[in-house]
Image 1 (cartoon, rainbow, N blue to C red):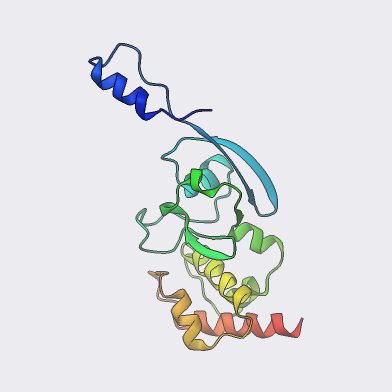
Image 2: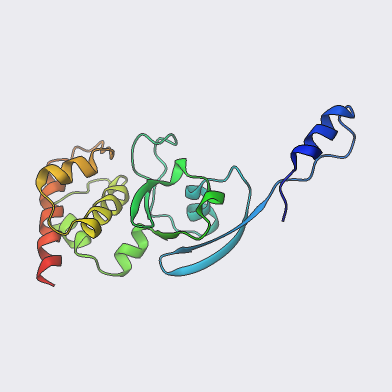
Length: 179
């Protein structure tokens, strides 16, 4: 495990690019996903989305825009919703990550509320909405409709299910408060 050093890069340039290529940069990162600990060798350019989806095989988060504009790749990292397509995996060392699979496995009331209130048509954006809503409810168990709309504002839905989302989140919050 080692990163290409600045000195090695300088030597490579100064010596006219020797036939030996620079060592491939790689890194070891350890983090927890849905309660399970992982230690992985990752390339520095790998996004968290790539590692979760292609390396770990957790396909709930979706790649829609690949530039942080839609929210479909949202996961929860240390209690905050983040865009996994914009986060380098190497930056996630020691972090606790939760995906929609982890939320669904725990039978979170959001899942039932999203079904009950018809918040998913094609289902492509749903994981991002659910993870963002869960992060909100973890921080604020009794959000207002305005707070919900603000929290979900970075998530896009091409099917137009926006009106139902606040109702579903309010319903899930009520269920959570009842215990």
